[in-house]
Length: 159
Image 1: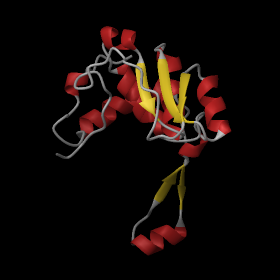
Image 2: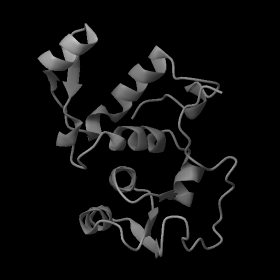
Image 3: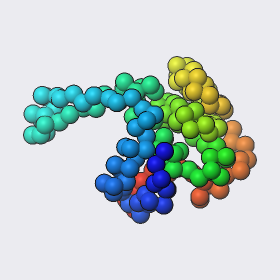
Image 4: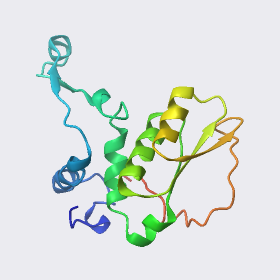
């Protein structure tokens, strides 16, 4: 694991090139290397040499694992002890559950009762606890020991 801490990541805006490289190095041991494929049609349409990354070949079937894994590897021991929580009916929940299993963190995923069964099975298969509600807008949210101003994993924003 790298010695890069969460404070090294640009929280005021987009990640720096150094942040991106550090994340690549940090998560590499846990993910499969996926290929790049050219697309003549998309290259012609964009006037570039456009390449497509085959992230659907990751164990979870999407790129979402990369961000989840990077974020969890940056958590402090105190944050890891609290576990992670997400609302997701699909790839993000699956990526977070996989990353949590790799890092050894408890993961809870809130989902709607009508979530796709293959996603439910995959999330459970990675060891996450699932809480269901009638819809994604109406989910059972028990009081949890989270300070949502400091304990949540957030994505980079430009504001």
